[in-house]
Length: 115
Image (cartoon, rainbow, N blue to C red; front, side, top):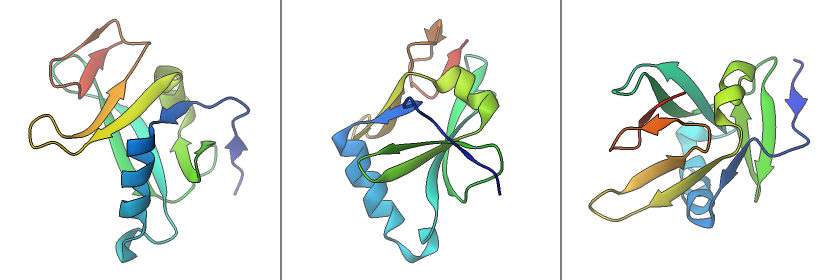
C-alpha cells in the first residue's frame, strides 16, 4: 500500500480534540484505525465535512498530531489544508468543530461550507 506522509500538517487538532480522538480510538471497534477527515457534497452550504475512524488507503495524505494519525484523501486535502479541529463537550454546541480558513462561507451549525 502506497501512502504519503505530509511534510506540512494538513489538519491541526486542538488538545481537546486529541484527547477525545484518543479516547474514541481506545474502544475495541476502533482498534488499529486512524482518524479520517474528508469532504463531500451536501449540507446547507454545498460541501460538508466528514469524520470517521478508518484504515489507511492508497494515496492518503497522513499527518501526525500529538500521537494521532490524521488521514486525508488528496481531493479533500485541497479543501482541508490549514483547518483546525476542536472538540467541546458542552451540552449545547458540543462535539467536533472544524475551523476552515479556505471556506468562503460556513453555515451556522459549522458542519458545511462553501468553497
